[in-house]
Length: 142
Image (cartoon, rainbow, N blue to C red; front, side, top):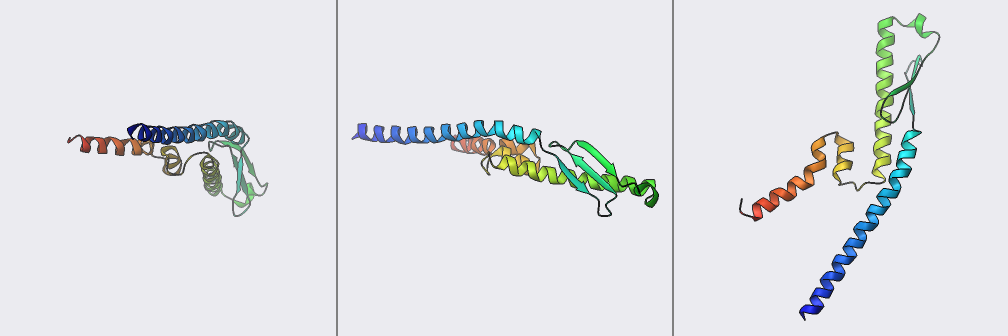
């Protein structure tokens, strides 16, 4: 009877291992595609008054900034600078959303990396491991 139980346990472990390997292979192949998509990504935002257009790359870096020719006549320097900042912020926010969406296609939603993409907290990477260590400590009587 114990041999059958061992075989069943081994079969279950092998099936789980195959599943994990399959997930890893999907993720690994997807990373090349993701990297290519990210390298060609740019997002443009336009101010409500259409005086400023800002384009940012995948890391939120400003790659292009354009002004309507009337912007210099219609806006004071302070107004123009505030408009530029708000427009760049909008473009960066759009970029962040798109990057999170792209990365989410490859990572499990409950993974530490996916949580980090949503909340920007480095501790998100270790939340699961911290929980496991706490539970192991409780089970060891610590």
